[in-house]
Length: 283
Image 1 (cartoon, rainbow, N blue to C red):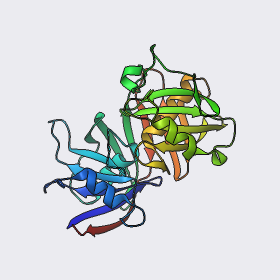
Image 2: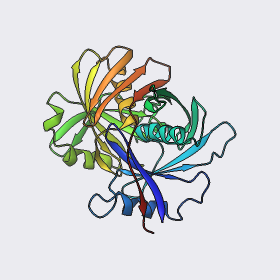
Image 3: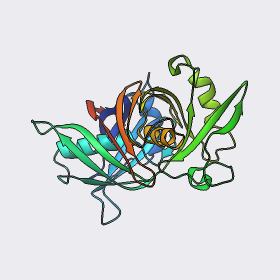
């Protein structure tokens, strides 16, 4: 039997398994497929293993497996939930907390309420990467900004940014709520242009430094929120001149995230982390 906790960050939900003092599951990819299934499993966008660090500078490590079993480098919503769980359960007292991820070592700062519970978490997401080889896109040049991409019957301008995992950001004139995200997101994710596949964000500008985002997540489909995606969206909006450098508010299907970025600096993301329930998986 496997004990787990379901948490979400702005609706991006994962099943967290504490492996700090116990052996991790032998087949986490297969386990993620079974547990994540919305009808016959516990239901989630994937599973996250909380593990002892491998490096001397970290307090813990996390591995993320999508609902299809593929492993993701990083999840900006999941890392907030990891911080919440290890703090509130007295597993790790450090604050700031340093977490090893597939995208490198990241630092998170806890915002506590009067009762000591974690109300929100601020994550240093690191510097965005633009070079096509680092993003994972087969195009020349130093940056892929407003590159015209024909997909079926439409043309999109894509902006490619890596936050440790690949993102293609597309700004739309039409309301994003009515956009057929599944139709085009699935196709773009799997284009040969992206050898490791890609996450795809569809975005409206709704005001001064206010954006509305929907995400097609690589390996999971549409998610209610994507933290690395929101980071990439904020960066792309500033690089293309749609937003001014500094704080950018992004509304997602599952809630609101606050991003901060200026050219050449790290991206900072602040958002909620919520525990849904604990359970036991019978295998």
